[in-house]
Length: 366
Image (cartoon, rainbow, N blue to C red; front, side, top):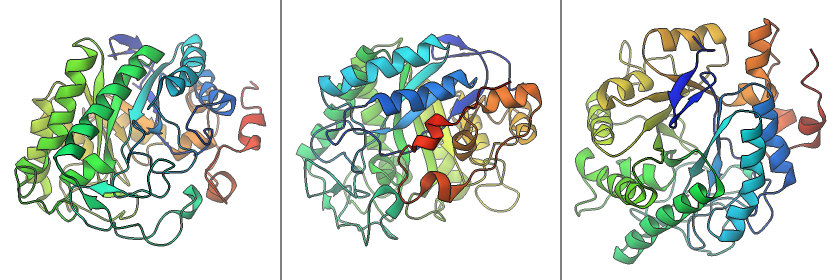
């Protein structure tokens, strides 16, 4: 099943393998993509992946940037920098989606502002991630006001239009891993007492408004999806307090929104996500939203991944660290060859930027 074509992004993608979004902090200081990133993404396309979701791209020149050397889609210069990458990936017959990410409270570095914003003035749990260039606790954000609400929605709209103009096959709104949209969904991040806080129905409202405005801007035929998780980058054990019922509320709302897909990420996509003998996150998304689902989380093993597809819990399989270790993972699986083990130290330390040895390794020998 992994090698079957699938009608996705208004086209037939060649297989069910997706490169998961992974922060690589390798853009220019001003956020412009570069040749190193082009070589990095092209390797996955040459390696047989049917679809690539980019690393999180910041959408504005205000509060959205989360990491130093993170790529942007905040300006026409950024968009122009993405065009050669998109073209190179397309030349290999692979689709590419731009993931639009507002860091919110999980800001480690921002060249445009020393201040961070969030639904409420709540400091993220845990410490900044050293391999993304941070250290110490996160700053306490400022609670968003009406002006911030308008500016954030406009930033997603304008960056989505730039992604479309750059040739991306669709956009994915980053609503996972503790970044801004996920902060609205999260009970301890969102302490608002207005229409955007309190119940899960209220906490999903801002996310839906962003989706609606992006859809109105890009048109009915341009694919728009969202990534969803319970865990955060700095709080990996977090679970929704309402369990499956909260999942139902969130995913049903997303299913009624003008979305084309949901991308779930969990520490283990095949494991119960809401307690023992409960649904997986992907299964909940599929059942409650009715949308195509990309599942991510320890799915490098092709047997395990194919089982998720066979059971109807997901439609596509996103691979993260397995893809870093095996940029040619689909080709290796197709040939029946062994996969390489992911070496965290070699790839992610001292910082998670793209290493020369990743690009110089010859992965395409038969």
